[in-house]
Length: 151
Image: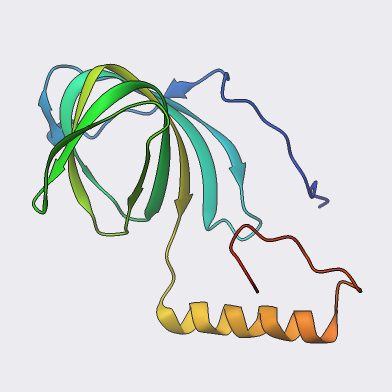
């Protein structure tokens, strides 16, 4: 199967229902929808657009998630964080295992970058393999661009 190396998407997409676990809802009737924009070849990372109407609910994270709020606002709190309001342009990172109480004010639309974590040993092995690839299969005389810093 052939996969495109570069894919282009938009955040104005048709979204499908992504119901919040009913036992997590604390107040109101929040309705969530979403659309997956991309998925990594190994299936461990994805990018989604997610929208939710007003309400309060718990969220329990089973993967790392970085969000960028596109529209609307939320108030987040946790056991270690006092209630704080976030809006368009704010970026928030939730680690695998985190718990947060969400209060969606009116509505919120976010772009989410989700990554399933691997045991440390598997991550170390993956980094070693990537290092060997760079040694034995160099890109050429030019350095590969990276958003993650020096490789």
